[in-house]
Length: 399
Image 1 (cartoon, one colour):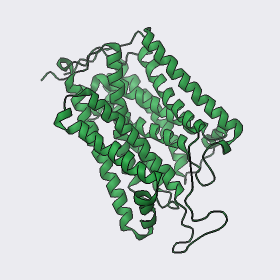
Image 2 (image 1 turned 90 degrees about the vertical axis):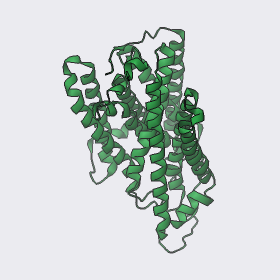
Image 3 (image 1 turned 135 degrees about the vertical axis):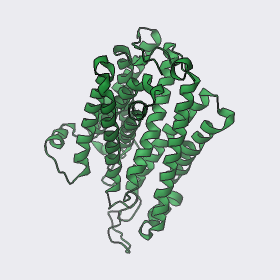
C-alpha cells in the first residue's frame, strides 16, 4: 500500500524563479500576439475565408485533448483502484485543469472579438456541438476542482472515489465532444467520420500521459524527489499502449475512408499528394509520433533508459501536433465538394487546394497558451501540497 504524504515546494531557488520568469515572458508573448491580431485583424495571419481554423486552433485543441488525458493517473487510482498511482493523483488533476485553461485561453483569444464569447455563453443553439462543448469544458474544470478538494481534505477522502468516477465519465464526454466537432462536419470530406470520437479519446490518453511523464520527471529532478523505477515502468508501458491505440484508430479511420468512394480524393490528398500535409502525416504523425515512441518504449535496448522515455514522450507530443495540423488544417485545405460527381471551377478558386502558412502571431499565441498552463502548474506545486515526498519503489511498489 502506498503512503500518501504530500509537501509543497519552497519555490525560492534561482532555477525556479528563472523558470517562472521564462514562462512569464512566453505568456506575455502570447498576449502580445493576441493583441497584434486583434488590433490589425486576421489579415496579418495565414488564415483566410477558406482556412478559418489556423495554428492557434492546433495548439488549443491539442491542449484541450491533452487535458483530458492528463487525468489518466488520477482516474487509474480512484476509478480502477490502483493505489500505486495515488501519490500522483493531485498533480494529475491540477495538470488537467491547467492544460484546459491554457487551451481555452488560446481559443478565446483567437476569436478576433473575444468579447463575443459573452454571446456564446448566454445564447445557446443546442443543435450545435460547439454549444455543448461550453458546458463540457466549464463542467470539467468544476468537477476536477471538486475532485482535487476531496482528495486534499482528509475528512472527505471517502468521497474522492465517486468524484473520480464522475470526472472519468465527464472527461470521456469532453473528448468525445471535441472529436465530434470534426466528426459531425459532413461538409468536410476529411472530417466526416464517426471514428473521430474514439480517435480523439485515444489521442487524449497518449498526449496527456506524455505531458504528465515529462512534468513528473522534471519536477522530481528539480526538487530532489526520488522517482522509482517501478513508477517509471508503469507510466512508460501505459504510454506505449495509448500510442498503439492512436495508431490503430488512425488506421481504421483511413481504411474506412478508402473503402468509401466519396472519400477517395481526400485520402489521396492526405496520404499521397498533399505536400506538407502528406509529409506531416507520414513523417510527423506515423514515424515520429507513433513508430519511434513504440521503439523507444518497448525495445529491450532502451528498457532502463529514462532519457529514451523522455524522448518518447516528446515524440508523442510532436507527433500529436503534426496529427492535429493534418486533421484541422489539412481537412480545410481540401476543397469542399459542392456538387458531387461534378468538376467545379470559378474565379473564386472553387475546387482548388487552399494555401496556408502560419504567421508568427499565430505561433506566439499558441506558445503563450502552453506557457500559461505550465505557469499554473508551477505555481500550484508551490502553493498546494501536490507532490509526494518520495516515489521510491519501497513506497509505491513494496513487492
